[in-house]
Length: 132
Ligand code: ZN
Image 1 (cartoon, protein in one colour):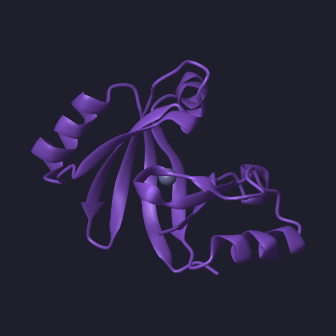
Image 2 (image 1 turned 90 degrees about the vertical axis):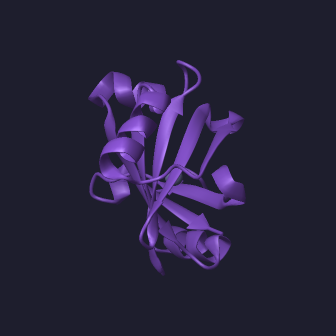
């Protein structure tokens, strides 16, 4: 069903400071930042090998990233798997009784189609499916 780890999403309080750490200490360059209004986040993409690190800073207190940091602190928030056909993948999951946060794909950063699976159905990990 899934092809590869598309990216790992990390919730951070200060995007600029975090980017600086990744670029200057780890040597992973940020190639793009984008505000995704719908998800109330500013994201930064840092490709590494065959995958990417996605840093997420909340733009609003009511957003999921803000709530995540409030509850658990900064850190890994989700893991995203690449799929070829997200609609088909979601249908298959529904058929198999997997609980979904998004029944239909929505627009993610970088023009991707994304959908989240509920952590209650995935042994505690927030999984994103991502079609590019
Ligand atoms: Zn993501």
